[in-house]
Amino acid sequence: MAPPARTAVSETSRRWIIVGTLALTGTVVSLQQTLVLPLLPALPRLLDTTADNASWLVTATLLFGAVSIPTISRLADTVGKKRMMMVALAVMVLGSALGALSASFPLVLAARALQGVGLSLIPVGIAIMRDELPRERVPLGVGLMSATLAIGSGAGLPLSGLIATHLDWHAIFWVTGAVGAVLLVAVWQVLGESPVQTRGSFDYRGAVVMSIALAALMLAISKGAYWGWTSPLTLTLAAAGVGLLVVWVLMELRVHSPLVNVRVAARPAVLLANVASLLVGFAMFANVLVTTQLLQLPATSGYGLGLDMLHTGLWMAPIALIFGVMAPVAARLIRRYGPQVILLVGSFVVSGSYITRVYLSDELWQIVAGSVLVGAGISMTYAALPTLIMRAVPMTETASANGLNNLLRYVGTSTASALLAAVTTMSVGRVAFPTFEALLVVFWAAAGASLLAGLTALPILGLDAEPDENGSGLSVCAIRWRRYTACNRHTRWRRRPTRGRPSSGQVCEGLLPIGEDPTLSSPSREL
Image (cartoon, rainbow, N blue to C red):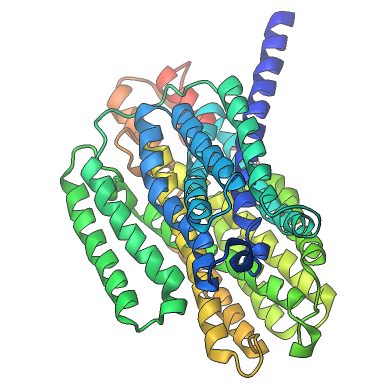
């Protein structure tokens, strides 16, 4: 009996090593996004460029990330998840090395664009977790990856402050490059190539059209505040992006192996989860943006605390801490009540927290406590959304489906940044900072977005679904009835009474087979 026990222990250890490796990729992805933000005011002087040009260092990362997410995710489903994760890490490390060795604005801009490819690591990593982990452990893995995303964001601000104070600004690239290189080796050594792949050729035309459409839309959203929301350039890009997306959807419906399975994405569970992801992304980034403003703006503004970058980052750290604390809690709640319920509850927690922050944002403890409450709700939604997606799509399309979900989340974060820039521009008077009322507008908008995200869970609240062979979401009862009628028409059945209060996986328990039936016993344990 000893060898099987050792085998079980080694298998459990291997899974935890895989989860840890994949979760750390989330840290480096968020780290490379946040490290540069506090240095933006100094970059025009350091790179001998204008402030508008320096803002492209953030836009380029989001732009190339938005373009790469659907492409890398689809290639992960077709040619291998480990392979594409290593490709994305290699490109990200290359971008970090280029930025670390460059001093001119064009080269640093190219470096930031290459780093944006790393954003595709998140959906691919979540897809690998689905392949490697037992079904009941997937929510914990997803929650841990969400926690490391927050940890990277929380560590980025104080680390950037230390770099700005004691080191050369190139260190922001050396740090992400070194961590990325270590993770590249870890992925190579720890992960095995997933046997779950889909057949078919890659949709190059769909990838090109979608990339152009996303580029146009992201440019309109991220630069609209600088160019003017009613300027011809902004309106042209927005119209072109929407028009190309319509063309792209029509193209994908006619392709045998599409870049994104539009029919699967249009199913209620997937569609509503994607809408919720966009809204939650908005609410999450609004928390980071406004909290940073409240901590850093000078006391002469009437509401700011005047903290420096280092202390601002330290007071933002509790947000990352609450993500780590909530990861196992959210996973347990998802297993007990289902991802739909946790999405609903988490979204309402975020909405209520934002409404509270409208009236309680005067003292330091109020600002920090409010941001932590928002973070607790966001951590619940971040764990629930990928789980909901994975329960509604086939395993062969996990990466591409999660890629679309993550893409919409980044669109939401860009929208939050654009809204803050817009209200700031409209409210700035003789001084160079926004009014407190302008920040409250962002709070109210985030509260409304969170409320809508929770409402999206209501139509699918009673659905405990998994995908069938064609990817359609079915209830547990429907799955069992289909297996019974298709494979076991002549099997004798008896009804087993349920003792006590049934769990969520036993709600549909009714007809059970007499004896061992391989077509039902194994899947039923997963349910």
